Image 1 (cartoon, helix red, strand yellow):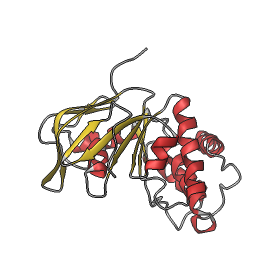
Image 2 (tube, rainbow, N blue to C red; image 1 turned 180 degrees about the horizontal axis):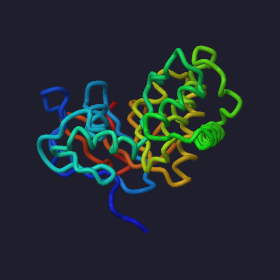
Image 3 (cartoon, rainbow, N blue to C red; image 1 turned 60 degrees about the horizontal axis):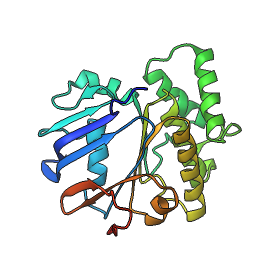
Length: 232
């Protein structure tokens, strides 16, 4: 079994713009992990995700994601790094002028897929994975928030990523729909895909246990003792 970490940070300072928001981050995320990054708004959670995707620069410390070193990563390598992961956002970020099927096809073609039959088969497969097999021809505005987030997760799965980065994926959903999205992410994780989820919703990580990193006072550290109160 490959036990090299998918995501590795050592003594890494995490930036938001030009400002350090997390000092000296140490984090190793292994294949198959389910990891929460929790903390108050403004505590640096999303900046960690943006560093993982090379949207934010890493200037100090070590950082490696899916085999790519983040320190000084070349612009031409960033798209290849991002193909190794699936990213799910709070606000879905679907293209509103295209159907579900066209949204997914756009991503596949942008990442090098050319064969029409393979594209169609992969779209059908990921829609089936998230329970949206009958929604391919719907427009985003015809879907509920929960359905749109399922489509966003299907999009994240297209290139069979090793890890899904989910940034407050339930933030715009009611509690029942949020629970359905969490069940879906847990199911995908049980299939072998690592999940890193940013949230400030305590109920989520209490109901669906995983490793927890808590961001507070410009640091982010793993919570080892389950009895420790996590301030949100």
